[in-house]
Length: 504
Image (cartoon, rainbow, N blue to C red):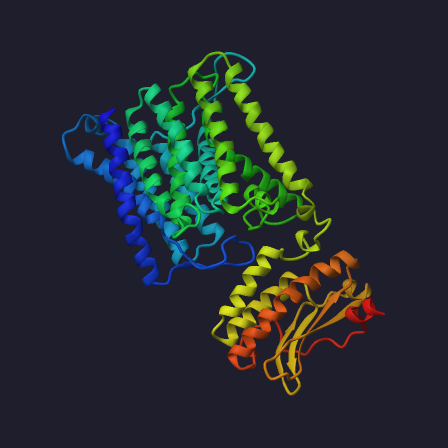
């Protein structure tokens, strides 16, 4: 136990020291996670914090390998598992660093993840059998062991990556999960797993000092992919010596929250005919925010759910009587369902009282981010880029910004003949200027009923004042240099001026 405590404290100290150093480098290199319409944070936050987690994780284990300690003997006796963690962990962290700095697409990340999963299979991290839910014993997977192992690694890695959407959320849930895996390792006599789990717990604890709301640094894909990789590896090794009737359920429950969120995300995107790797704002934490919880309240609420699931995993492991574990599981499921219902029945979430809460365009939080970006813009090209994005998100036919003497901005969307048959609405928004000169934002969009029309109009009304202030600050420059889909003028389509028609 002394080795476990030393590993935890060393990794905690290394993370607490390394994170500010990584933060300093990220600030000097301007490696920020920029806010956008789908993200919750409203200011640029440095990323690459995952590097500190990786360094802190490996520091105590590397030290034990270099000195004569009780745990070092166990490490040398299980060299394949140690090699697997070092090689696989470095590869996963490398693709994470590349993604945080340069940007990697989904295919590139998936190829690395599958390759690492195959490597781990041949280094003794494999799922050879699963418990038989209808009888005693286990079901031997045989030739299916490799694809099941690969699916587990890839699934857990991406599950942790998907849930990394709020300050401290992925780190805190990872800490809860790895605490359970540490306990399982100790109870099963798996010294290697317990030692590495203690190291990961310390690394996450040291990092959360800087990552909990309000976060000073994000773990980025470097941290979330690496965290998912380690959790996937040790959820296999810590359950392999457990009772076959519960071996499969224990890691599933320990990682329950990110797994549930991932299944919901996949189902949601398939139902909407969207790529399963596409981003959205419908994860559990997003729904809790829209239901009225603060950022910190949403994170703490999900910590509670994760703790219930982790408790259920432990109870399933320590007792042959499944009743206690199932009671905890039922409570966790009830809590989860209540949170889902809270989000679903909240009027703002369903769009009953707020048209911007539906799927037709950006919500109010996203528009607030855009307003902040507009007022902070130092170049006309940045203003044009923001307007281009909002025009796409609200599915405009066209958008222009004009003064009495000049056309400053023009955006032309893809023309949909079917949409045009429903009618095209022309909407004009005056832009206040310091000199009182007439300036105007003009948008065209296909009619979509009152609620649909308001979902388009309201975001533009909300950004109008910030747009005017930004253009005043920049001296009302031409925005034509920014990339736009077309430089053609707005379509001269027959339409109704909605502002005029509502006032009649």
